[in-house]
Length: 448
Image (tube, rainbow, N blue to C red):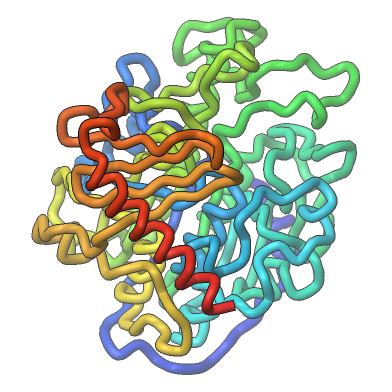
């Protein structure tokens, strides 16, 4: 285990409150960063090696139609932790550099998942990328987590933890000096948390910063600008660790990420807790793709169109795997649409808790879908980021790339890559769907 002496510096806060009405399951929610639908072996990638995540898929349920309501890191995390659309919870944008350090980010009126679970008797810990605000009242330990180790920004350096010239590794609310690769640090911190809380229900939130691209603003002048991973993960592919080939570096980062997931799974096995634990691995949005930064944009959202920050499928449809032994089947594939806010409800159900009644929760209970192949609990799924809007209703996907673009319509049942816009031949359907989208936005506006 990595630097356990350092981990003991964490401030632990116990809380008593409402007790679960059923036997509670432990919950491990792993949220990976900018990993595309086509980046994992179990989703069809022919080169990248992800044996731990593949194992999880073989032991659980793999979702093919899992969505994010906003295709960027901050709003995606806000919706996951509140169970509410970004337009409802108030975090609709990617946080700026200064906001990552001192901004409120997710409004304080919002109550997030660890607060509910701690009231239900859970130990709660977060280990990884925060990226939803670090002003007083916004920090992980202000918002329901008993302990935290991680980078508070969106994309700190993997080895130096620098973010725009400032140190970005924290324990609780204080800067933390340590050495190591962020994926391994977060995996070991989560594993230590599991070990220390093996005798009580726990919620481990593990938002790895991998596989975010290596931001040049976070490099020291003498640092090479390339994808970063320990040498062993380059050598696993037969690559030189000093390679400048971006595809080689990205594969090493992904396999290092998979090994981090494997460390957490191994800890559950070691404690004899795998059968009592809900484990989820999901990505916060699609990968970076396109011609803008060829040395960076080597992720795969295949077979879908576009990527991060868009509302086409490559930006909002991501991998998600759920393992819950005895509650969900093994080696199952679910093709019904589910959205990340449903994981909020799933976690509460695993704890034997009901969703809150004092606010609108947009997430729905996905257990019938995951367990019984029931239809999606959503009539519509909505997507918004910056000027782009989209909506899925069954087989139909409506897209408006920007306010000055015409509405586009795609039939995902035959055109999941969104190559053929059929809006011209389906004007009444386009009008009906757009009316529903506008009505949804009006409903949110009326709540303010």
